Image 1 (cartoon, rainbow, N blue to C red):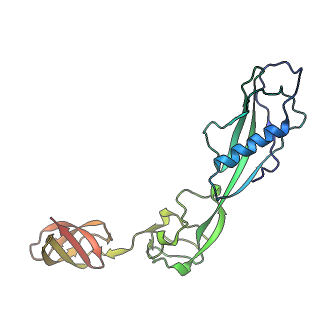
Image 2: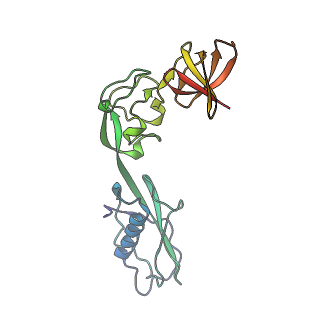
Length: 229
């Protein structure tokens, strides 16, 4: 990966005598490039930009390997301040601004959805987007969203996120449900009324119509809940 148009903003140069050999600017550039390549996740799609190191920059040649660093210890999408440090006898430190755009294929709605609509695979397209411009929680895998339902109205063209979807409601409030209870080898069935909506794996209150007791049960399927002892 080649860094385009990287420009260094010189923030600090330690006081040194400039007599003697000068540090090679291309070597500084190479050190920054290598650091960025090493600290970006492999296999990603990136666009790296910044500004070019001024070739007139004159620094004493460093007797030690150049140290490249960031305050956070990593390169992230967005603007990054990258430092280059010489810890030789005539030490110096300079900083550059490097911008990184990271692109991923994310799930985008190709039709609008209403609240509680079930999301189908044909409603979705994969589009490459700059993830630095997206809110956290964007979705990339069909399995994370297909056959789930929208929590609110979502316009076409939206990038789907975890905040847009929830598990499918299998039991609705006021609906009659089959209650299975007991323990391994001994199961009892009863009829009850759900007192709240529920998705698979969710615990809701259910009224047993025989005993009139309100119990907490786990939704296991459409119209079916269970209580295990």
